[in-house]
Image (cartoon, rainbow, N blue to C red; front, side):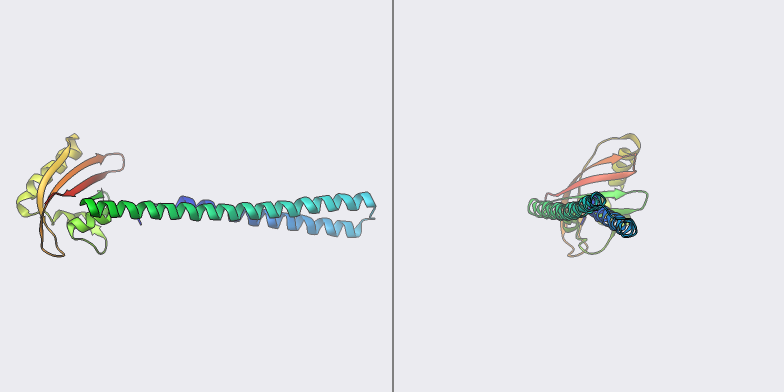
Amino acid sequence: MRLSRTGAFNSVSNMKLVFVFVAVFWTLLLVVLAFLSYHDTCSSAHLAQHAIVMAIGLVSIYISYRYASRSASLGRLIEDELEYAESNLARAELIAGFGNWEFDLDQGVVDASMGARTIYGLIEGPITIEQARQIPLPEYRALLDEAFQNLIRDNIPYDMEFKIRRPNDGAIRDIHSVASYNSSNNRLFAVIHDIT
């Protein structure tokens, strides 16, 4: 999965923690009040006050539980929608012969969509930038390196056509690639299209 779900999981976990905190707080309060009412002289007004506080505590616990349950359901719904959207994007890329990937220039790794992995024949495992650089045919390497450097150094648009040899089946494919560079995080984002 390429989409981050930590925000959804954190909010669900936070709601559960709120529920636990409220439940523990009211339970302790009720125990203290019960202890105090046992040792006090109990008038009917005093008992009514304790009953009201206990009722408020129980209602608060119930509301906290319902809120936490609803938040957990919402978190699961969001997760399901993200999975559905990602699945549709992957299918659309495969049908159209497109893919996208992001090069993390600091770490030397590539985060590739299934479409990009399929086009480049790199279906399994992590991809390094060095692996991706070896797939274009050697006669294109100098031209691609120059365009890459021009994009990073001078912000000259990267819009290239070249041939690759896929490592998984040896097929030669014609590729059109367009890329942009984000200097704030030192990442290059590229869209590739199999135009064979």
